[in-house]
Image 1 (cartoon, one colour):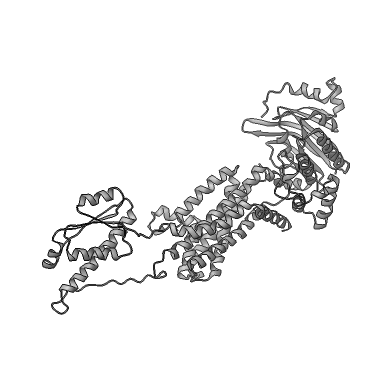
Image 2 (cartoon, chains in turn red, purple; image 1 turned 135 degrees about the horizontal axis):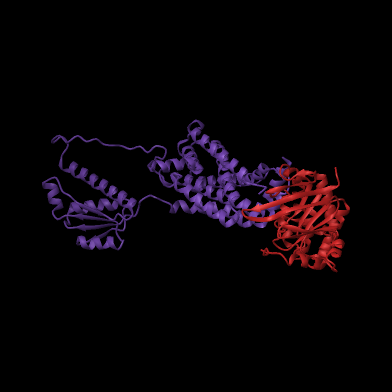
Length: 247
Length: 372
């Protein structure tokens, strides 16, 4: 297999007369951390939902882990992990019960569930919270747990939709440590964010404005191209021309 | 199958932890079943008669005493004029006026014929109809007594009469509970099943976990089965509680085979829960799901035959009733509990419920989309 994890060509999604995603073309290499940056309402989540097999595109082509998004959505789902904006663990189940459930429906064996569950708890340093209800965990812990559960089946690619929304800077930093660890294990990370300091952590970044990809390169190259000091300024220069209102 | 096991484990954990759900599912039916049959009672009792006796004779007193001796009439009042009695009706204190004319006794004895006047408050149609019927029967009985007294047997030939004798099959003592309690069990079970099933998937939509489920390689029918089976088990349990209450609180022992009831119930629940899940797949919020479920449960109840007779419905009502799963279960419940019907007798209902079940569940699986 080639070293391309995700390939999108003129990918478009229209809702009635509104074009949420407008002919975007990009590729993500295996093992890289790919930042998908854009203002609220720029079309990041819609694009990500297409790649996860949750939404069928209107036109264009895309392959994820070598599978076509039109024909093989269910095969894609076996190979990816996903962490949505909305918190996706069951609050009325305990930490270990959530792990067991998600690992179980991805088809892990009982032994694997036990081993990887213990490993996960150790990595997060919450061995003593295995029997705690998720509802009573602090938000930062919940986010880290949700991420770890999303990669428990060791997918080829993990999609993270604004994973650090609403958490403090220290927790965000810890969260990014988890992302780096996952990338070290060979998992391709596709992450949307509108925190520009997070964009700096990525190997490559694409900036979406009004459904289009207006810039696509490494953070260093982008800064050079726009002759600015930070990704924040790159983003500001691109996004200030946006016509679409944030929703 | 392994996937299903994990889904079921999760659902059962969530259900058993939801205290409010358990209370409404288990304690609710017990309370409703012990109280409701006493209230949801169509038997007409306590009919208040306003008597206007212009005769004040032995015979008029006999007639009045005979009326009050009946268990259906009570709270009677005496008035000197029809107008006074009419006031009672207007104030809703009386249901029926019985006016006995002056010379009642004299005419009855001399002429062998007299008329009494009965006026009925027909706002409550059932009570009016049944009440005047009872009163008519009592007067007819009184007639018979008078005749026997004055026409000595053998003195001269009586007009031949045909006496009609009734036998009440399947419910010989016309016990209201025997008829109503099985119906109420059906009604309660339908409400609980439809509501809990329709709220289920939509709850995951609201909290956002459905997104996470949809991105897994889980099969749609596994997901639907994982939602259906726990409520199927729970409803079986509720039904058992209902049958125990009806056995020990009302002494109702099914005449027919209880296994047959459970057999039909199994199919009925798959159909009902499938309909609930179908509602859930169409709704985006729990509020929408509740409104839809409420609408259907109400219609199911109205046309089920539990509270009114399907035979007296217009043709479209009968057709609608045939399409409602609850009607079939209500019919089977009464057939088996009261008549002791066998599998052969309930076969048409079985076929109908299976067809409806296949339709609702297939529809629900098809309408549940992992992809938009």
